[in-house]
Length: 351
Image (cartoon, rainbow, N blue to C red; front, side):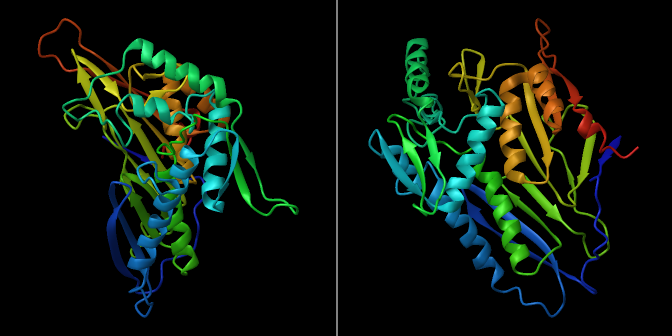
């Protein structure tokens, strides 16, 4: 059985007459990206491949925690008590991520890079290396306490008449990690670029996060299926019309390692310093902006089904939670999955 999710608002703007599909693709942020758009037969599109790649290259140069020479890398190495000048896009993305951190009670915090690195999900000491060992409880507690001691001092200074620069304060020991928001922002940036080039009918994807606008040449929206946790289970397939919408999913099945039969997810709860282990297999958020969908899918995952669903209701987020229940004591039995939808998402289902 298939369910359909539709946007609340549908534009009457048709695709260009005799529109032609064009595909572009590449690699960035350690993953792949792709764009499919509809253009008029006479529209110039040969420059778009380079332009799209440049947009993502700019995101990496500013916000990557994998590149030592990025603006984020320079902030992380900056001396304690210094104000660092940030590019406009980096400043705006960091400001949004800090807002999500406040609204989620610290469940998704861009300042928790030291904890992410400690668990082997950062650029160094990766969990897949033969010499990697999971951190001890004492090491986690120490890193968490160090973060708590300086986290309150992180501050942003927007541009003003006296100082047109955008700045961020480094209190010392803060390692920014924007991996929960930068990929979604990259999707949005590609969408903004296409709009600036006069294209209004497209679907954009970076590493599984998507955003769409307009329609295909046949007048149909860009249909995409929500990720399934396990292709062998009996989850109901759900498709969404990406017409002015973006979708992002956070799941514990993407990146993890196992030790002594325990799965350690790449999603870290900054409040405890531990990988999340609350039974959630995935959280999907549908939003007008992919940056928001990306960040909120992570925050709701950390909060867990009950707290996360309650927050989604308060904020009016369209969210889908998939909870996994292990088949304890039954040899060979597969886990079961239970789905929970926020009321805003239920309101988007095609009756």
